[in-house]
Image 1 (spheres, one colour):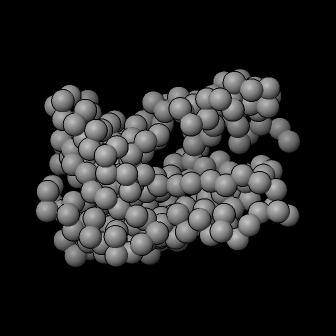
Image 2 (cartoon, one colour; image 1 turned 120 degrees about the vertical axis):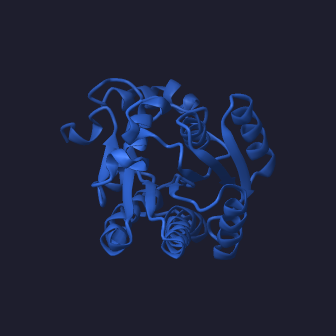
Image 3 (cartoon, one colour; image 1 turned 180 degrees about the vertical axis):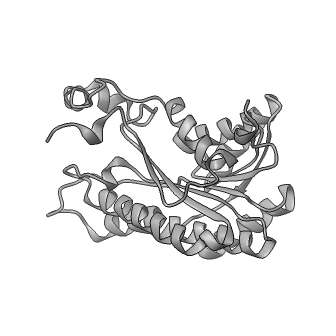
Length: 255
């Protein structure tokens, strides 16, 4: 592998790493040579994944973290640093969604999505950057946005709003933190096949959505790896404030 893509000296912390894309990102980064801290609320699920990564000769540990709680985030970063040293890569992945028409959406559902997807990304990014400045390491923050932060779909208003906020936050923090050698970028996946959405995409409604994707298929988690590696590694050393869409051409499809 080109040395620019080498992550052997990196300590990456991945939020929302107990399942789905976060778990995949943690496995991938460990396979690329990084020391990886998996963070989420579900300790048992984290422990299982850490054991699997270690069985494949990867370096991994886990910390319990609630991204809606600044105190929990701070404690988790402190424990992560005790194990692997300063965090130099943050993958800000934790997120939730709530489906429902905007006229009927309840306040609790709105708050849950915004608190996790927007406030949580802010708090984790700030905690990571404060430590990067303190240690003088600089680093890379990769916020996981969505193509729904750049275009919209019906029935997911708080999710789309939160991801649009993540996109603008990414650009704002990139501007402020460039002087500290901290790069802040976003990865905006399109519709990626996971265990959580397989039933929907097997339905008629799901198949109709797939037909609107120019490549006429869902993406696979592994197809996000190249963009993530670019943003996390020295190969992306002059890239900040960028939003990379990995979506099979969905954003450029006709209205």
